[in-house]
Image 1: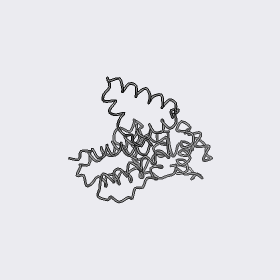
Image 2: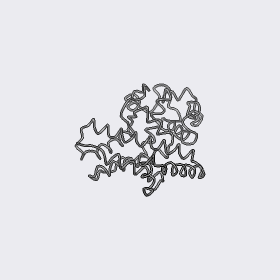
Image 3: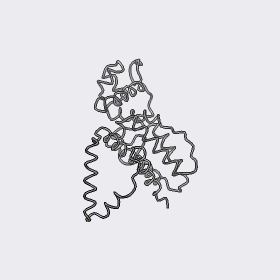
Image 4: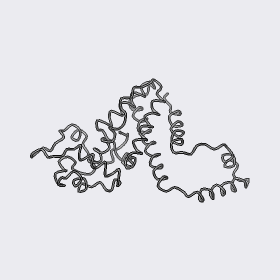
Length: 238
């Protein structure tokens, strides 16, 4: 899942990482692979959080010595690149454009959200890096194909995709935080009473009008869809 902007200063060489064979340069071929190492790291991050992903823990999961892992991932930055591209392989990259670029782009965003919810460590990692692995690039290809009817130039298409990914990552990060610290019902009721009192004092007419408007569904899915619609429907492609 690629993003525009800096790579976070990780120093990972994409050509060396993605275009070199999946095996150490020296010695006999071990009983594990880069795929096994990456899968173990993703499983750790999914269940225990990204802080649990250390070279020592991953080595223990695959039954290898720590030093042998460095032939595949010389540092945690490289391992994160492998992990991001690994989970990006879950994204449907073959969806054919319908010709309705807004609908296609919204489908891209919904797929990104679903992926990030399955892997809660993912949104934070996308704020500081740009992953250029094969799975990430395949999904980028889908997004760029969706944007073809807009007539935007190449740089603008990449900017739109970066903006979309940043929005999804930010929303999912907020969504996960809220889920982990849900307000008790009594607190929500107290806040509602307070706002109603303030809105009735005559000094906050805009707030009073807003609070008097019909309510909307507040489920995470419904809110995400509303925010996404505002973002994509308002994109200027002129």
